[in-house]
Image (cartoon, rainbow, N blue to C red; front, side, top):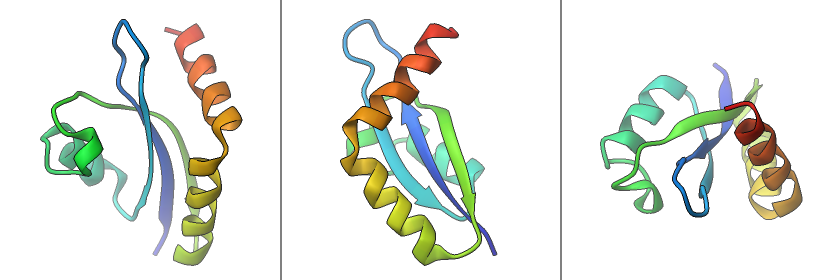
Length: 86
């Protein structure tokens, strides 16, 4: 079984918020976020995946997710690279 750590972005004209999470099934999780059944923060918005990383073990995925959530600089860098390529 593998796990994914991902970053979602909501592209709008103001701040382009991001969300970090982890899951086993990336496609199913994205559908939940976009149907307002995912995390409370993601409700009511349309999200796109801008980053994903695969892990073999859940504990490794959770550690990286925690680190990514608390590393604003890395998240901003990933977001800026994505927005440059739009």
